[in-house]
Image 1 (cartoon, rainbow, N blue to C red):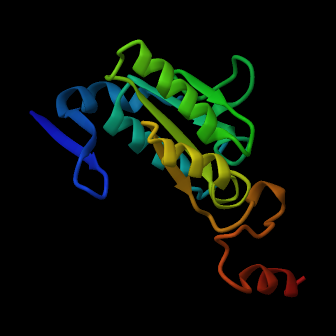
Image 2: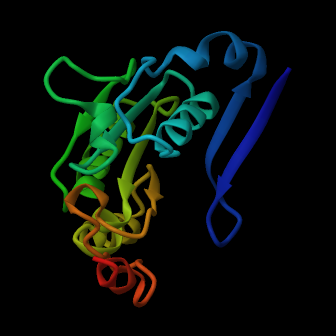
Length: 174
């Protein structure tokens, strides 16, 4: 049984038709990320990443900045992804996605999804300029912000999406 998920813009124009083959999803998609990753205990990021790949499938290129999601990307040939993946700089993941999606469009490869999986720091703080430019130019990629409300791998430094005074409360206990 096949299902269709359509991502639309504000004018209801279909940007990405996503075909979900449920039989293939149940049989193959659970193995696109290695088991036994080193994400933090209780963190939902690994489950989110697995869910992304269950929907999009193996024709996906995933990009992560240096952040919590970099744990999945790893370094060198040590990666949890079993699909093409790339770790960009923190501030320009959207620029890398723009370039890759343009190259795929030039090659007429419309069946491949380009996905950015970034945290709130790399999205709403340092990465906002590149993301804003990519949106304005109309580049085709999927951007997912994993908003855990702080830069968690730098000792809970607040980000632009951290609720007011929540980090102050954390530090006041010490």
